[in-house]
Image (cartoon, rainbow, N blue to C red; front, side, top):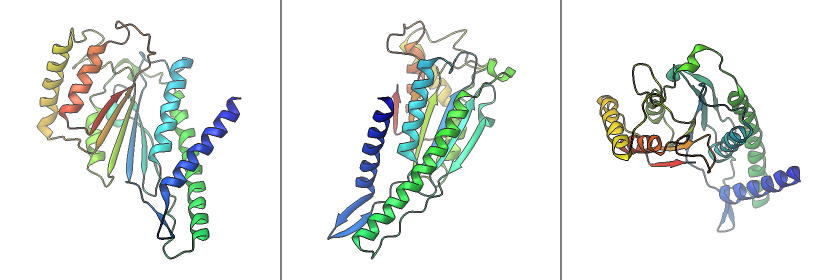
Length: 261
């Protein structure tokens, strides 16, 4: 049944892509080029996140698949995976750039245009499958070094800023993490988390002011925080003040959207 469901969902997905990419205007097939997208995935590789837990693995893999299907569409789309640990800014595990060329259908008859788009979709699907395998390997990769003792999430912000300065029209950022910053010479939410909403916002504003000395502004960026907790997790496990801290910080940095899942 699961296999049948997957095939069914795949058929729905590819039908929807065809409808988005291919429209008929004055009896002529037109390919609508989507925005060029750069996707950044930050996967927590510290001791506090166990991706071998079935719930966490399934949740994170679904997000990876959704991100790949949504954001790898045209030649030049980029997909990078970084590890969150002691040295997050240098933690790139892999980077991939989409190679499939957009279909050339100008002046082509309807049937040939549809065949060209079908060929394009087939190539895109192969690339997506390749990236999903790479991303899944990254997710399950174990970090047994001492770098797993610190969780430097704030170090990801300069990485995002550098990507925004590139040619992508959209930057999609996904954190697969409990978002518990834990740095010896900085914020350490394991030792001391914000006691309430007010303190969380104040800390975020303080850290924004430190970051903004370099004039970082993330207007092209959408941020999604994917937490390794289910809906029934207690506030002791899934501390809402930590989420408030990050929401406040990213909003101050000017992100176009922010969500928590």
